[in-house]
Amino acid sequence: MAFPEIKYCLICDAVRAEALGKLTLLGFFGVTPDVQIKIKDFRQPLQAAFVLVGGTGEGSARVGFQFADARNQVLLATPQADAGPIEPGKRLLTGVGISHTFPGPGRYFFRVVVDDRVHYQTSFELYQGTPADFTV
Image 1: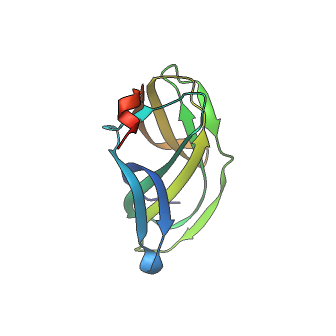
Image 2: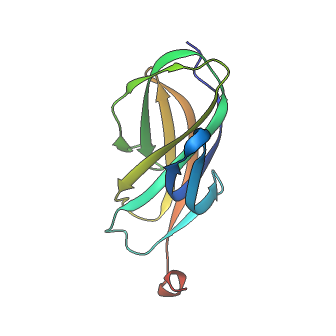
């Protein structure tokens, strides 16, 4: 099984699937690991989308996602689910949405788990925002 190599992970507020395999990104934060997200209230869940861009692959796999803190404690994990068959020659472009309450400011890790192994890992940072950050 050759799951596609993941080359980039973009973080945004939301992602919407469009015709012709395109995605519309709403509220673009940046490309990991160079993403800093200001949080208004850590008691509220962060709603975000992680957009994965990669190469081609083939076959099928069981795929899941994990979020961990700097101590490597897994805070959120999805069960692995069947993905595929992967269309030969088609590049990876997919989005993963979350709504999760993170414990506080710091660096967090996003992982893609394929067939029980970490296939891709990147990081992002959450910061406590100030009231001025949330006014237009």
